[in-house]
Length: 598
Image (cartoon, rainbow, N blue to C red):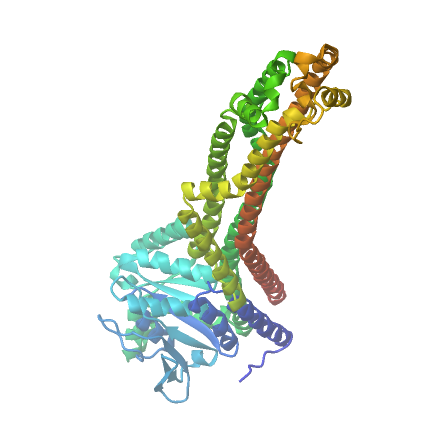
Protein backbone atom coordinates (compact mmCIF):
# COMPACT_ATOMS: atom_id res chain seq x y z
CA UNK A 1 0.00 0.00 0.00
CA UNK A 2 1.39 3.40 -0.99
CA UNK A 3 2.25 5.58 1.93
CA UNK A 4 0.86 9.11 2.05
CA UNK A 5 3.48 11.83 2.48
CA UNK A 6 2.38 15.43 3.17
CA UNK A 7 3.40 18.18 0.73
CA UNK A 8 6.06 18.87 -0.43
CA UNK A 9 7.32 15.38 0.44
CA UNK A 10 4.62 13.69 -1.61
CA UNK A 11 6.26 14.94 -4.83
CA UNK A 12 9.71 13.86 -3.62
CA UNK A 13 8.29 10.43 -2.76
CA UNK A 14 7.00 9.94 -6.30
CA UNK A 15 10.29 11.08 -7.80
CA UNK A 16 12.20 8.68 -5.55
CA UNK A 17 10.06 5.78 -6.72
CA UNK A 18 10.96 6.67 -10.32
CA UNK A 19 14.63 7.06 -9.36
CA UNK A 20 14.82 3.68 -7.61
CA UNK A 21 13.09 2.01 -10.54
CA UNK A 22 15.63 3.52 -12.96
CA UNK A 23 18.54 2.54 -10.71
CA UNK A 24 17.31 -1.03 -10.46
CA UNK A 25 16.95 -1.26 -14.25
CA UNK A 26 20.45 0.12 -14.83
CA UNK A 27 22.08 -2.23 -12.31
CA UNK A 28 20.19 -5.23 -13.67
CA UNK A 29 22.03 -4.75 -16.99
CA UNK A 30 25.35 -5.68 -15.38
CA UNK A 31 26.50 -9.22 -14.65
CA UNK A 32 28.77 -8.06 -11.86
CA UNK A 33 26.03 -6.56 -9.69
CA UNK A 34 25.64 -8.77 -6.64
CA UNK A 35 22.23 -10.09 -5.70
CA UNK A 36 22.65 -8.37 -2.33
CA UNK A 37 23.17 -4.93 -3.88
CA UNK A 38 20.27 -5.39 -6.27
CA UNK A 39 18.07 -6.40 -3.34
CA UNK A 40 19.21 -3.35 -1.38
CA UNK A 41 17.85 -1.10 -4.09
CA UNK A 42 14.65 -3.13 -4.37
CA UNK A 43 14.25 -3.00 -0.57
CA UNK A 44 14.15 0.76 -0.75
CA UNK A 45 10.96 0.66 -2.83
CA UNK A 46 9.31 -1.20 0.01
CA UNK A 47 11.11 0.83 2.65
CA UNK A 48 9.44 4.08 1.57
CA UNK A 49 6.04 2.64 2.48
CA UNK A 50 7.07 1.60 5.98
CA UNK A 51 7.26 3.50 9.25
CA UNK A 52 10.49 5.12 10.32
CA UNK A 53 12.97 2.38 11.24
CA UNK A 54 15.09 2.87 14.35
CA UNK A 55 17.65 0.05 14.13
CA UNK A 56 19.64 -1.16 17.11
CA UNK A 57 22.95 -2.88 16.32
CA UNK A 58 26.01 -3.96 18.25
CA UNK A 59 28.08 -6.87 19.46
CA UNK A 60 26.57 -9.92 21.06
CA UNK A 61 26.11 -9.40 24.80
CA UNK A 62 26.30 -5.61 24.55
CA UNK A 63 22.74 -5.37 25.91
CA UNK A 64 20.77 -4.49 22.76
CA UNK A 65 17.60 -6.31 23.78
CA UNK A 66 17.75 -4.88 27.27
CA UNK A 67 18.19 -1.41 25.77
CA UNK A 68 15.09 -1.87 23.57
CA UNK A 69 13.13 -3.06 26.61
CA UNK A 70 14.18 0.16 28.35
CA UNK A 71 12.79 2.17 25.43
CA UNK A 72 9.54 0.20 25.59
CA UNK A 73 9.61 0.47 29.40
CA UNK A 74 8.72 -3.19 29.56
CA UNK A 75 10.57 -6.50 29.94
CA UNK A 76 9.35 -7.63 26.57
CA UNK A 77 12.30 -8.96 24.57
CA UNK A 78 14.12 -11.99 25.99
CA UNK A 79 17.60 -11.32 27.38
CA UNK A 80 20.37 -13.58 28.64
CA UNK A 81 24.02 -14.52 28.44
CA UNK A 82 23.39 -16.70 25.38
CA UNK A 83 22.42 -15.27 21.96
CA UNK A 84 18.73 -14.51 22.21
CA UNK A 85 18.30 -12.79 18.85
CA UNK A 86 19.16 -15.09 15.95
CA UNK A 87 16.86 -13.35 13.47
CA UNK A 88 15.92 -9.80 12.59
CA UNK A 89 13.19 -8.75 15.02
CA UNK A 90 10.92 -5.81 14.22
CA UNK A 91 8.86 -4.36 17.03
CA UNK A 92 5.79 -2.51 15.75
CA UNK A 93 2.90 -0.78 17.43
CA UNK A 94 -0.07 -2.91 18.30
CA UNK A 95 -2.92 -2.75 20.75
CA UNK A 96 -2.01 -6.21 21.94
CA UNK A 97 1.33 -7.89 22.34
CA UNK A 98 1.90 -10.54 19.71
CA UNK A 99 4.40 -12.33 17.52
CA UNK A 100 4.43 -13.64 13.95
CA UNK A 101 6.88 -14.58 11.22
CA UNK A 102 7.08 -12.31 8.21
CA UNK A 103 9.60 -12.54 5.37
CA UNK A 104 12.19 -14.47 7.43
CA UNK A 105 11.83 -11.95 10.25
CA UNK A 106 10.07 -11.96 13.57
CA UNK A 107 7.45 -9.22 13.92
CA UNK A 108 6.46 -8.33 17.46
CA UNK A 109 3.67 -5.95 18.40
CA UNK A 110 3.55 -3.83 21.57
CA UNK A 111 1.35 -0.92 22.69
CA UNK A 112 4.27 1.33 23.74
CA UNK A 113 3.62 4.96 22.66
CA UNK A 114 7.08 5.26 21.08
CA UNK A 115 6.05 2.66 18.49
CA UNK A 116 3.30 4.89 17.16
CA UNK A 117 6.02 7.01 15.56
CA UNK A 118 8.47 4.35 14.46
CA UNK A 119 9.35 0.68 14.37
CA UNK A 120 12.32 -0.55 16.38
CA UNK A 121 14.54 -3.24 14.93
CA UNK A 122 16.61 -5.61 17.06
CA UNK A 123 19.45 -7.20 15.03
CA UNK A 124 21.51 -10.31 15.81
CA UNK A 125 24.73 -9.56 17.67
CA UNK A 126 27.94 -9.29 15.76
CA UNK A 127 31.05 -11.26 16.72
CA UNK A 128 33.48 -13.82 15.36
CA UNK A 129 31.50 -16.81 16.63
CA UNK A 130 28.02 -16.23 15.25
CA UNK A 131 28.91 -15.35 11.66
CA UNK A 132 25.48 -16.19 10.28
CA UNK A 133 23.87 -13.86 12.80
CA UNK A 134 26.33 -11.15 11.87
CA UNK A 135 25.54 -11.64 8.16
CA UNK A 136 21.85 -11.07 8.84
CA UNK A 137 22.61 -7.85 10.67
CA UNK A 138 24.88 -6.62 7.88
CA UNK A 139 22.23 -7.31 5.26
CA UNK A 140 19.66 -5.22 7.13
CA UNK A 141 21.66 -2.14 8.04
CA UNK A 142 20.99 -0.33 4.74
CA UNK A 143 17.28 -0.17 5.64
CA UNK A 144 18.01 1.92 8.74
CA UNK A 145 16.62 5.42 9.00
CA UNK A 146 18.43 5.98 12.28
CA UNK A 147 20.90 3.74 14.14
CA UNK A 148 21.57 3.24 17.81
CA UNK A 149 24.94 1.49 17.97
CA UNK A 150 25.19 -0.25 21.35
CA UNK A 151 28.66 -0.81 22.83
CA UNK A 152 29.46 -2.52 26.09
CA UNK A 153 31.32 -0.14 28.39
CA UNK A 154 33.74 -2.83 29.55
CA UNK A 155 34.99 -3.68 26.08
CA UNK A 156 34.00 -0.74 23.92
CA UNK A 157 35.13 -0.40 20.33
CA UNK A 158 36.03 -4.01 19.67
CA UNK A 159 37.18 -4.93 16.14
CA UNK A 160 33.66 -6.01 15.16
CA UNK A 161 32.41 -2.63 16.38
CA UNK A 162 34.81 -0.88 14.03
CA UNK A 163 33.86 -3.07 11.04
CA UNK A 164 30.16 -2.64 11.66
CA UNK A 165 30.47 1.09 12.15
CA UNK A 166 32.25 1.29 8.79
CA UNK A 167 29.32 -0.51 7.21
CA UNK A 168 26.79 1.79 8.90
CA UNK A 169 28.73 4.84 7.77
CA UNK A 170 28.90 3.43 4.24
CA UNK A 171 25.14 3.68 3.88
CA UNK A 172 25.05 6.94 5.76
CA UNK A 173 22.20 6.75 8.29
CA UNK A 174 22.62 8.98 11.31
CA UNK A 175 24.16 7.00 14.13
CA UNK A 176 24.34 7.58 17.87
CA UNK A 177 26.56 5.36 19.98
CA UNK A 178 24.88 4.02 23.09
CA UNK A 179 27.59 3.30 25.67
CA UNK A 180 25.71 0.64 27.65
CA UNK A 181 26.47 -1.14 30.93
CA UNK A 182 27.97 1.90 32.67
CA UNK A 183 26.77 0.17 35.84
CA UNK A 184 29.87 -2.04 35.45
CA UNK A 185 32.25 0.93 35.61
CA UNK A 186 33.63 2.23 38.87
CA UNK A 187 32.56 5.85 38.61
CA UNK A 188 31.77 8.76 36.33
CA UNK A 189 35.44 9.37 35.65
CA UNK A 190 35.75 5.93 34.02
CA UNK A 191 32.62 6.66 31.99
CA UNK A 192 34.23 9.82 30.62
CA UNK A 193 37.44 7.96 29.85
CA UNK A 194 35.58 5.33 27.83
CA UNK A 195 33.63 8.07 26.01
CA UNK A 196 36.87 9.84 25.14
CA UNK A 197 38.43 6.57 23.93
CA UNK A 198 35.48 5.80 21.64
CA UNK A 199 35.49 9.33 20.24
CA UNK A 200 39.21 9.21 19.49
CA UNK A 201 38.97 5.78 17.85
CA UNK A 202 36.09 6.87 15.65
CA UNK A 203 37.94 10.03 14.65
CA UNK A 204 41.21 8.28 13.82
CA UNK A 205 39.85 5.10 12.23
CA UNK A 206 36.52 6.19 10.76
CA UNK A 207 36.93 9.92 10.28
CA UNK A 208 33.98 11.15 12.36
CA UNK A 209 33.12 11.93 15.99
CA UNK A 210 29.76 10.42 16.86
CA UNK A 211 27.35 11.49 19.54
CA UNK A 212 27.79 9.18 22.55
CA UNK A 213 25.12 8.62 25.19
CA UNK A 214 26.25 6.58 28.25
CA UNK A 215 23.41 4.51 29.73
CA UNK A 216 22.63 1.54 31.91
CA UNK A 217 19.79 -0.32 30.26
CA UNK A 218 19.92 -2.72 33.19
CA UNK A 219 19.14 0.03 35.73
CA UNK A 220 16.42 1.40 33.47
CA UNK A 221 14.61 -1.95 33.22
CA UNK A 222 15.08 -2.64 36.91
CA UNK A 223 13.40 0.67 37.70
CA UNK A 224 10.15 -0.62 36.11
CA UNK A 225 9.99 -3.36 38.72
CA UNK A 226 10.36 -1.05 41.73
CA UNK A 227 7.25 -0.04 43.56
CA UNK A 228 9.03 2.63 45.57
CA UNK A 229 8.57 5.66 43.35
CA UNK A 230 11.53 7.71 44.68
CA UNK A 231 13.86 4.73 44.23
CA UNK A 232 12.34 4.08 40.87
CA UNK A 233 12.91 7.66 39.72
CA UNK A 234 16.45 7.62 41.11
CA UNK A 235 17.40 4.42 39.33
CA UNK A 236 15.83 5.69 36.07
CA UNK A 237 17.74 8.94 36.41
CA UNK A 238 21.02 7.14 37.07
CA UNK A 239 20.45 4.96 33.99
CA UNK A 240 20.51 8.11 31.79
CA UNK A 241 17.86 6.52 29.54
CA UNK A 242 15.86 9.73 29.71
CA UNK A 243 18.41 11.33 27.37
CA UNK A 244 17.67 8.60 24.82
CA UNK A 245 13.92 9.00 25.25
CA UNK A 246 14.22 12.76 24.78
CA UNK A 247 16.21 12.22 21.59
CA UNK A 248 13.51 9.88 20.24
CA UNK A 249 10.59 12.11 21.26
CA UNK A 250 12.03 15.52 20.48
CA UNK A 251 14.89 15.33 18.01
CA UNK A 252 13.31 12.57 15.99
CA UNK A 253 10.13 14.55 15.51
CA UNK A 254 7.77 14.01 12.61
CA UNK A 255 9.59 16.42 10.29
CA UNK A 256 12.95 14.79 10.98
CA UNK A 257 11.50 11.32 10.53
CA UNK A 258 9.98 12.26 7.17
CA UNK A 259 13.26 13.66 5.96
CA UNK A 260 15.27 10.70 7.18
CA UNK A 261 12.77 8.25 5.72
CA UNK A 262 13.14 9.89 2.31
CA UNK A 263 16.90 10.29 2.68
CA UNK A 264 17.58 6.61 3.39
CA UNK A 265 16.85 5.35 -0.18
CA UNK A 266 18.93 8.17 -1.60
CA UNK A 267 21.90 7.20 0.56
CA UNK A 268 21.57 3.56 -0.45
CA UNK A 269 21.26 4.25 -4.16
CA UNK A 270 24.18 6.69 -4.03
CA UNK A 271 26.36 4.10 -2.28
CA UNK A 272 25.49 1.26 -4.63
CA UNK A 273 25.74 3.42 -7.77
CA UNK A 274 29.14 4.76 -6.69
CA UNK A 275 30.42 1.24 -6.08
CA UNK A 276 29.52 0.04 -9.57
CA UNK A 277 30.57 3.26 -11.24
CA UNK A 278 34.02 2.53 -9.89
CA UNK A 279 33.85 -1.03 -11.21
CA UNK A 280 32.60 0.22 -14.57
CA UNK A 281 35.40 2.78 -14.77
CA UNK A 282 37.91 -0.02 -14.27
CA UNK A 283 36.21 -2.12 -16.94
CA UNK A 284 36.11 0.76 -19.41
CA UNK A 285 39.80 1.39 -18.76
CA UNK A 286 40.54 -2.26 -19.54
CA UNK A 287 38.46 -2.01 -22.70
CA UNK A 288 40.44 1.08 -23.67
CA UNK A 289 43.57 -1.07 -23.35
CA UNK A 290 41.95 -3.60 -25.67
CA UNK A 291 41.21 -0.98 -28.30
CA UNK A 292 44.77 0.31 -27.93
CA UNK A 293 46.00 -3.25 -28.45
CA UNK A 294 43.86 -3.61 -31.58
CA UNK A 295 45.18 -0.29 -32.89
CA UNK A 296 48.70 -1.46 -32.14
CA UNK A 297 48.10 -4.72 -34.02
CA UNK A 298 46.78 -2.79 -36.99
CA UNK A 299 49.67 -0.33 -36.80
CA UNK A 300 52.16 -3.21 -36.69
CA UNK A 301 50.36 -4.80 -39.62
CA UNK A 302 50.66 -1.56 -41.59
CA UNK A 303 54.33 -1.20 -40.64
CA UNK A 304 54.87 -4.85 -41.52
CA UNK A 305 53.38 -4.26 -44.96
CA UNK A 306 55.54 -1.18 -45.50
CA UNK A 307 58.73 -3.02 -44.58
CA UNK A 308 58.08 -5.98 -46.87
CA UNK A 309 59.39 -4.24 -49.99
CA UNK A 310 62.51 -2.84 -48.37
CA UNK A 311 63.09 -6.09 -46.52
CA UNK A 312 62.81 -8.09 -49.73
CA UNK A 313 64.99 -5.64 -51.63
CA UNK A 314 67.76 -6.09 -49.07
CA UNK A 315 67.50 -9.84 -49.34
CA UNK A 316 67.44 -9.78 -53.15
CA UNK A 317 70.68 -7.82 -53.10
CA UNK A 318 72.30 -11.13 -52.21
CA UNK A 319 71.40 -12.45 -55.68
CA UNK A 320 73.29 -9.66 -57.41
CA UNK A 321 76.70 -11.40 -57.36
CA UNK A 322 75.19 -14.43 -59.11
CA UNK A 323 73.61 -12.36 -61.86
CA UNK A 324 76.69 -10.16 -62.15
CA UNK A 325 78.85 -13.29 -62.39
CA UNK A 326 76.76 -14.59 -65.29
CA UNK A 327 77.04 -11.24 -67.03
CA UNK A 328 80.81 -11.09 -66.61
CA UNK A 329 81.25 -14.68 -67.80
CA UNK A 330 78.92 -14.02 -70.70
CA UNK A 331 80.87 -10.97 -71.77
CA UNK A 332 84.10 -13.00 -71.69
CA UNK A 333 82.42 -15.77 -73.65
CA UNK A 334 81.29 -13.29 -76.30
CA UNK A 335 84.74 -11.73 -76.53
CA UNK A 336 86.35 -15.15 -76.89
CA UNK A 337 83.88 -16.73 -79.30
CA UNK A 338 82.86 -13.84 -81.54
CA UNK A 339 86.34 -13.73 -83.01
CA UNK A 340 87.20 -14.39 -86.64
CA UNK A 341 89.36 -17.36 -85.66
CA UNK A 342 86.55 -18.97 -83.65
CA UNK A 343 83.70 -18.62 -86.15
CA UNK A 344 83.99 -22.22 -87.25
CA UNK A 345 82.88 -23.35 -83.79
CA UNK A 346 79.53 -21.61 -84.25
CA UNK A 347 78.49 -24.06 -86.94
CA UNK A 348 77.57 -26.71 -84.36
CA UNK A 349 74.60 -25.18 -82.49
CA UNK A 350 74.42 -27.89 -79.86
CA UNK A 351 78.12 -27.70 -79.16
CA UNK A 352 77.92 -23.91 -78.89
CA UNK A 353 74.98 -24.08 -76.49
CA UNK A 354 76.75 -26.68 -74.38
CA UNK A 355 79.84 -24.53 -74.15
CA UNK A 356 77.72 -21.46 -73.31
CA UNK A 357 75.87 -23.46 -70.65
CA UNK A 358 79.10 -24.63 -69.09
CA UNK A 359 81.00 -21.34 -69.30
CA UNK A 360 78.27 -18.76 -68.62
CA UNK A 361 75.28 -20.41 -66.93
CA UNK A 362 77.46 -22.79 -64.95
CA UNK A 363 76.07 -23.26 -61.42
CA UNK A 364 73.98 -20.05 -61.47
CA UNK A 365 70.59 -21.86 -61.28
CA UNK A 366 71.76 -23.87 -58.26
CA UNK A 367 73.19 -20.73 -56.65
CA UNK A 368 69.96 -18.83 -57.30
CA UNK A 369 67.85 -21.67 -55.93
CA UNK A 370 70.02 -21.85 -52.81
CA UNK A 371 69.76 -18.09 -52.25
CA UNK A 372 66.01 -18.16 -52.84
CA UNK A 373 65.63 -21.00 -50.35
CA UNK A 374 67.56 -19.02 -47.77
CA UNK A 375 65.48 -15.90 -48.42
CA UNK A 376 62.28 -17.93 -48.12
CA UNK A 377 63.47 -19.39 -44.81
CA UNK A 378 64.22 -15.93 -43.48
CA UNK A 379 60.89 -14.52 -44.67
CA UNK A 380 59.02 -17.39 -43.05
CA UNK A 381 60.90 -16.91 -39.78
CA UNK A 382 60.06 -13.21 -39.74
CA UNK A 383 56.44 -13.87 -40.71
CA UNK A 384 56.15 -16.47 -37.98
CA UNK A 385 57.55 -14.00 -35.45
CA UNK A 386 54.97 -11.43 -36.58
CA UNK A 387 52.22 -14.02 -36.27
CA UNK A 388 53.31 -14.99 -32.78
CA UNK A 389 53.42 -11.38 -31.62
CA UNK A 390 49.94 -10.79 -33.01
CA UNK A 391 48.54 -13.93 -31.42
CA UNK A 392 50.15 -13.03 -28.12
CA UNK A 393 48.39 -9.66 -28.15
CA UNK A 394 45.06 -11.26 -29.03
CA UNK A 395 45.54 -14.01 -26.43
CA UNK A 396 46.24 -11.37 -23.80
CA UNK A 397 42.97 -9.66 -24.66
CA UNK A 398 41.18 -12.97 -24.42
CA UNK A 399 42.69 -13.73 -21.01
CA UNK A 400 41.65 -10.30 -19.73
CA UNK A 401 38.10 -11.00 -20.79
CA UNK A 402 38.15 -14.32 -19.03
CA UNK A 403 39.72 -13.01 -15.82
CA UNK A 404 39.00 -9.31 -15.53
CA UNK A 405 36.40 -7.99 -17.94
CA UNK A 406 32.71 -7.94 -17.14
CA UNK A 407 30.95 -10.84 -18.85
CA UNK A 408 28.93 -10.41 -22.01
CA UNK A 409 25.85 -8.35 -21.33
CA UNK A 410 23.58 -10.27 -23.71
CA UNK A 411 23.55 -13.38 -25.89
CA UNK A 412 24.77 -11.56 -29.01
CA UNK A 413 27.82 -10.32 -27.13
CA UNK A 414 28.51 -13.84 -25.93
CA UNK A 415 28.36 -15.15 -29.50
CA UNK A 416 30.84 -12.46 -30.60
CA UNK A 417 33.24 -13.31 -27.80
CA UNK A 418 33.00 -17.03 -28.53
CA UNK A 419 33.69 -16.36 -32.22
CA UNK A 420 36.77 -14.35 -31.27
CA UNK A 421 37.98 -17.10 -28.94
CA UNK A 422 37.44 -19.72 -31.64
CA UNK A 423 39.30 -17.70 -34.29
CA UNK A 424 42.27 -17.11 -32.03
CA UNK A 425 42.44 -20.77 -31.04
CA UNK A 426 42.16 -21.94 -34.65
CA UNK A 427 44.89 -19.56 -35.77
CA UNK A 428 47.12 -20.66 -32.91
CA UNK A 429 46.56 -24.34 -33.72
CA UNK A 430 47.35 -23.64 -37.38
CA UNK A 431 50.55 -21.88 -36.36
CA UNK A 432 51.51 -24.80 -34.12
CA UNK A 433 51.10 -27.21 -37.06
CA UNK A 434 52.80 -24.84 -39.50
CA UNK A 435 56.35 -26.06 -39.03
CA UNK A 436 59.23 -24.13 -40.49
CA UNK A 437 59.97 -26.90 -42.96
CA UNK A 438 56.36 -27.17 -44.10
CA UNK A 439 56.06 -23.42 -44.34
CA UNK A 440 59.23 -23.19 -46.42
CA UNK A 441 57.98 -25.91 -48.76
CA UNK A 442 54.63 -24.18 -49.11
CA UNK A 443 56.16 -20.81 -49.91
CA UNK A 444 58.72 -22.33 -52.23
CA UNK A 445 55.93 -24.04 -54.14
CA UNK A 446 54.47 -20.60 -54.78
CA UNK A 447 57.74 -18.81 -55.43
CA UNK A 448 59.87 -21.40 -57.17
CA UNK A 449 57.04 -22.47 -59.44
CA UNK A 450 57.30 -19.16 -61.20
CA UNK A 451 61.04 -18.89 -60.66
CA UNK A 452 61.65 -22.36 -62.06
CA UNK A 453 59.88 -21.36 -65.23
CA UNK A 454 62.00 -18.23 -65.30
CA UNK A 455 65.21 -20.24 -65.01
CA UNK A 456 64.27 -22.57 -67.86
CA UNK A 457 62.99 -19.82 -70.12
CA UNK A 458 65.72 -17.37 -69.19
CA UNK A 459 68.60 -19.79 -69.67
CA UNK A 460 67.21 -20.97 -72.97
CA UNK A 461 66.88 -17.38 -74.03
CA UNK A 462 70.43 -16.66 -72.99
CA UNK A 463 71.83 -19.69 -74.79
CA UNK A 464 69.97 -19.12 -78.02
CA UNK A 465 70.01 -15.38 -77.76
CA UNK A 466 73.80 -15.05 -77.94
CA UNK A 467 73.59 -16.20 -81.52
CA UNK A 468 70.38 -14.44 -82.39
CA UNK A 469 71.22 -11.07 -80.95
CA UNK A 470 73.98 -10.21 -83.40
CA UNK A 471 71.63 -9.70 -86.29
CA UNK A 472 73.48 -7.85 -88.97
CA UNK A 473 71.87 -7.79 -92.38
CA UNK A 474 75.01 -7.29 -94.43
CA UNK A 475 76.74 -10.20 -92.59
CA UNK A 476 73.76 -12.38 -93.48
CA UNK A 477 74.13 -11.41 -97.11
CA UNK A 478 77.88 -12.13 -96.97
CA UNK A 479 77.23 -15.50 -95.38
CA UNK A 480 74.77 -16.39 -98.15
CA UNK A 481 77.32 -15.35 -100.79
CA UNK A 482 80.07 -17.40 -99.16
CA UNK A 483 78.08 -20.58 -98.57
CA UNK A 484 75.07 -20.68 -100.83
CA UNK A 485 72.73 -23.51 -100.01
CA UNK A 486 74.17 -24.05 -96.52
CA UNK A 487 71.63 -25.16 -93.89
CA UNK A 488 71.15 -22.32 -91.49
CA UNK A 489 68.81 -22.98 -88.54
CA UNK A 490 66.88 -20.25 -86.88
CA UNK A 491 69.02 -20.57 -83.81
CA UNK A 492 72.31 -20.45 -85.75
CA UNK A 493 71.20 -17.23 -87.36
CA UNK A 494 73.28 -14.75 -89.30
CA UNK A 495 76.55 -15.76 -87.67
CA UNK A 496 76.60 -18.90 -89.82
CA UNK A 497 78.30 -16.83 -92.51
CA UNK A 498 81.56 -18.32 -91.17
CA UNK A 499 80.95 -21.83 -92.54
CA UNK A 500 83.86 -22.41 -94.84
CA UNK A 501 83.78 -18.78 -96.03
CA UNK A 502 86.68 -17.52 -94.00
CA UNK A 503 89.06 -19.90 -95.71
CA UNK A 504 88.10 -19.05 -99.27
CA UNK A 505 86.85 -15.52 -99.64
CA UNK A 506 89.19 -12.95 -98.31
CA UNK A 507 86.97 -10.05 -99.36
CA UNK A 508 84.00 -11.37 -97.47
CA UNK A 509 86.21 -12.23 -94.51
CA UNK A 510 87.40 -8.65 -94.46
CA UNK A 511 83.77 -7.47 -94.46
CA UNK A 512 82.83 -9.83 -91.65
CA UNK A 513 85.84 -8.94 -89.54
CA UNK A 514 84.81 -5.30 -89.74
CA UNK A 515 81.36 -6.15 -88.43
CA UNK A 516 82.51 -8.34 -85.54
CA UNK A 517 83.15 -5.53 -82.99
CA UNK A 518 79.63 -4.23 -83.45
CA UNK A 519 78.28 -7.79 -83.29
CA UNK A 520 80.11 -8.38 -80.02
CA UNK A 521 78.77 -5.11 -78.64
CA UNK A 522 75.22 -5.97 -79.66
CA UNK A 523 75.57 -9.46 -78.20
CA UNK A 524 76.79 -8.06 -74.86
CA UNK A 525 73.96 -5.55 -74.80
CA UNK A 526 71.44 -8.30 -75.54
CA UNK A 527 72.98 -10.48 -72.82
CA UNK A 528 72.78 -7.66 -70.29
CA UNK A 529 69.13 -7.06 -71.17
CA UNK A 530 68.26 -10.75 -70.87
CA UNK A 531 70.00 -11.14 -67.51
CA UNK A 532 68.31 -7.96 -66.36
CA UNK A 533 64.95 -9.40 -67.39
CA UNK A 534 65.81 -12.63 -65.61
CA UNK A 535 66.64 -10.66 -62.47
CA UNK A 536 63.36 -8.71 -62.69
CA UNK A 537 61.38 -11.89 -63.20
CA UNK A 538 62.90 -13.36 -60.06
CA UNK A 539 62.15 -10.23 -58.08
CA UNK A 540 58.57 -10.12 -59.34
CA UNK A 541 58.05 -13.79 -58.50
CA UNK A 542 59.40 -13.34 -54.97
CA UNK A 543 57.49 -10.11 -54.46
CA UNK A 544 54.26 -11.70 -55.70
CA UNK A 545 54.58 -14.68 -53.37
CA UNK A 546 55.57 -12.46 -50.44
CA UNK A 547 52.59 -10.22 -51.12
CA UNK A 548 50.40 -13.30 -51.25
CA UNK A 549 51.73 -14.42 -47.87
CA UNK A 550 51.09 -10.98 -46.38
CA UNK A 551 47.56 -10.92 -47.80
CA UNK A 552 46.88 -14.26 -46.14
CA UNK A 553 48.42 -12.98 -42.89
CA UNK A 554 46.30 -9.83 -42.95
CA UNK A 555 43.16 -11.79 -43.82
CA UNK A 556 43.71 -14.16 -40.89
CA UNK A 557 44.26 -11.27 -38.48
CA UNK A 558 41.15 -9.46 -39.68
CA UNK A 559 39.14 -12.65 -39.48
CA UNK A 560 40.18 -13.06 -35.85
CA UNK A 561 39.84 -9.41 -34.90
CA UNK A 562 36.53 -8.59 -36.59
CA UNK A 563 34.27 -10.39 -34.08
CA UNK A 564 36.20 -9.18 -31.05
CA UNK A 565 36.34 -5.60 -32.27
CA UNK A 566 32.59 -5.73 -32.81
CA UNK A 567 32.14 -7.32 -29.40
CA UNK A 568 34.38 -4.79 -27.66
CA UNK A 569 32.65 -1.87 -29.35
CA UNK A 570 29.23 -3.05 -28.31
CA UNK A 571 30.39 -3.94 -24.81
CA UNK A 572 32.04 -0.54 -24.40
CA UNK A 573 28.90 1.21 -25.61
CA UNK A 574 26.76 -0.89 -23.28
CA UNK A 575 28.95 -0.30 -20.24
CA UNK A 576 29.24 3.39 -21.02
CA UNK A 577 25.47 3.55 -21.30
CA UNK A 578 25.08 1.99 -17.85
CA UNK A 579 27.78 4.31 -16.51
CA UNK A 580 25.86 7.30 -17.86
CA UNK A 581 22.63 5.99 -16.34
CA UNK A 582 24.25 5.56 -12.94
CA UNK A 583 25.68 9.05 -13.17
CA UNK A 584 22.19 10.38 -13.89
CA UNK A 585 20.88 8.39 -10.92
CA UNK A 586 23.47 9.93 -8.62
CA UNK A 587 22.80 13.42 -9.91
CA UNK A 588 19.06 12.95 -9.40
CA UNK A 589 19.66 11.55 -5.91
CA UNK A 590 21.74 14.63 -5.05
CA UNK A 591 19.01 16.91 -6.36
CA UNK A 592 16.33 15.16 -4.31
CA UNK A 593 18.52 15.21 -1.19
CA UNK A 594 18.95 18.94 -1.59
CA UNK A 595 15.19 19.28 -1.97
CA UNK A 596 14.66 17.30 1.25
CA UNK A 597 17.12 19.43 3.18
CA UNK A 598 15.48 22.39 1.53
